[in-house]
Length: 359
Image 1 (cartoon, rainbow, N blue to C red):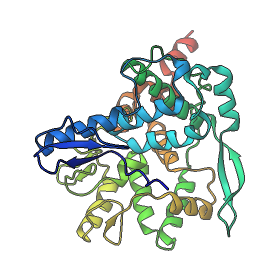
Image 2: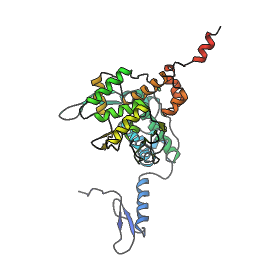
Image 3: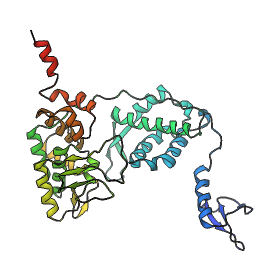
Image 4: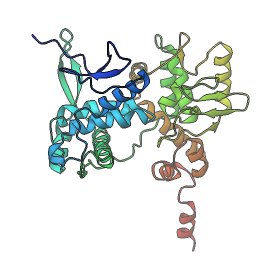
């Protein structure tokens, strides 16, 4: 039985100070590198281009799986949240892996949307999936968007001669769900009394007072750090991201800290906390399960962490905040504020209404 391949790796000549790349079969020792550093660079280049032709290929000769692999290896590590690209590729691979790029068309994309399911229940013993549910059009749209960007990247980098167009589902309507004051109070109380979930109450308070996205809140501390933003309680400013983080389309601009929230933050900091949302001294990575339990206990379904951002913006406009100020404070474009939340403001369409009503 042949020995299993260990993959491409570096070897050194026995009697000469030269390094060479060994992959499978008998190595070619006619070339090599005099230094280990140069050899490591050559190995990295070899692995990156292994199995890929130097010239561009026709879409009929390249699989979607190959294009997604190139995108994952070369581009995904450069984005602010590479794990999101990974989640989308994991979902795309079962359907698209063996299909050629020439198969990317409207009918295939619609079939992917119909067959894309998520596991909602597993067998308690075998852990095998036993119940599935359809994925939302918004999720399918994001996943197919990653496929389109992977194809465009491969085309721009010269791997393929042309970039087929991916047909995306229609953009879903913006959600209108926001919590009333009573619902927010019930959710907050459920978090406070939840077993091992007191950290969730901190998250809810920050989200409702600032409208900050979940990921940014969970990365924030009380001192400058390399993970995320921080609360400058001396200046009263909240920085939603660190200087080392890349700015993304999900804007994370600084904002002033509301007086009520500042009191909570000082109390948490003075108690020894290093992070805004922490459990037993460690930063909390996710609040998915705790939040779902609190929502169920408070009976405020449907509600997701992003619902708290909608709630914060809606309450601010109901209290007569201007669209321009709301856009800056909540790190959301003025166009989105006007389109999704504008009708909550008592000043919405006020000048037009006066003009129509004027005799």
